[in-house]
Image (spheres, rainbow, N blue to C red):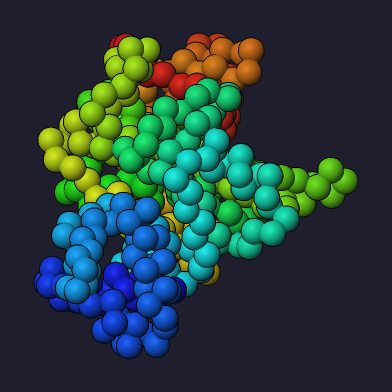
Length: 325
């Protein structure tokens, strides 16, 4: 696109002015197209100075502008992110996917700079303020199987943890329901899907990822339970690099031909990171509460719970909390 070709030229000229005539000549487009491209870049947050008879220069290159162009510049994916849809504001990236799945293709990624109705599990609201977090959904139609849905969720959690580690040098805590730091939540993942009623065949899966990245504050009802990478690490995190790393990690894990055969390896790493084996837990599933000790994980990713009556129960979803010894 013309605007991003303009951006590359401005970036490569060390803040020197480049005339509109020179830009027009280099790119083989009209001066009007250059003017429109410059204005489009400004609208996306790039700081560009324009002076008559001198031209244009990039005065401040804000690297954390989320766009398909910036993300594709640094990631190495071949299957995920072939098409990336970026929105300044949207109700929910997962909701967008569910409402527009008819034209989306496998591997498409939806990203928002702000969500007005970000969703978590059980229709809880995920706080999604502007220019603060990573709010993205990944649309999948291949390599998904009914008996591996929990494995897919686990692989997503592991991918996000690894991406955070590589981008920040810090290892967050991986919990059953979310990712946290110092017992506070920084990330939630919501996996949803559509199934054919008669055959039970999976039509598609959408993996929604919400991360508190550069938030400096939270509403009163969330302050005690939530934190952000910036608050905990005392530095601003580049969201574009984090998004790119997440997509790279997910592609390496779930688009791998050996993804399903790597099940034991994935589950082993998950158990090691959650440190949940041997813990006394309480888990709420629908209107049911289960109390017991986690004694293992089955090959489908379900926690094996030993209850006080010595009976075993396998749990795949629910609101879990660790009980004090």
